[in-house]
Amino acid sequence: MIKEKLVEKLGDNIVKNSCLWYPEGEKNLRYFAEKFKDKNIIEIGTCYGLSAAVLSEYCEKVYTMDIMDFQGKYDVWYELQRHNIKFILLKDNIDKEIKIKELIDQHNISAVFIDGEHWYGQLKYDFNICAGIENILVHDYNDTHKEIKEFVDELKCEKEIRGNFVLCQKKNP
Image 1 (cartoon, rainbow, N blue to C red):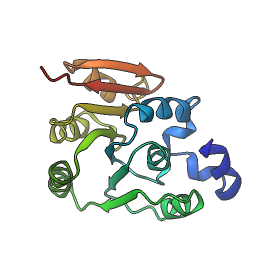
Image 2 (cartoon, rainbow, N blue to C red):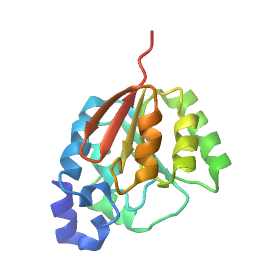
Image 3 (cartoon, one colour):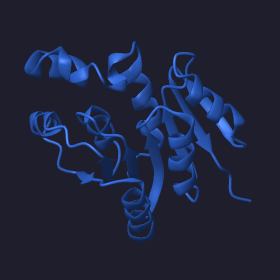
Image 4 (cartoon, rainbow, N blue to C red):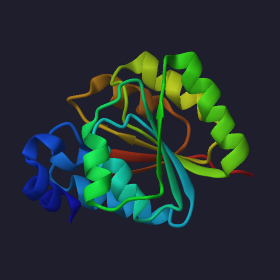
């Protein structure tokens, strides 16, 4: 598993802000990543790039974006020899919207993984700019992050929940 390898090489601080820190976090992310095998995916919220590293084992290309450029992600991707990850540094929400629309138009995006800001308004914004994508995976769906849970519970989509992850699938008629 990636978590153990990275803790051994880079120390446990590298995983503390990642979905891999949670019990069963990596296992649950891998479960959903398998559904996107050989597809292109966008990740909103990179931090140290651990989720992107896991997704890159399954997906053809991972486009991961954040408003902060945490340098540790490059150590992670180098250590794991990941070459199918592209990091996009964002200036603001307008820049995010432009970049996501470009990726959707140019790269046949099959899924989005949202693990960025943890408040209702930002999650709604991120979700809405990805509205044309059939599969949207959200992390931190739990009672600790009440605004995320509230927003996701309001959605009209098929939901599959595993641990702190929820996959919202919009079925095309």
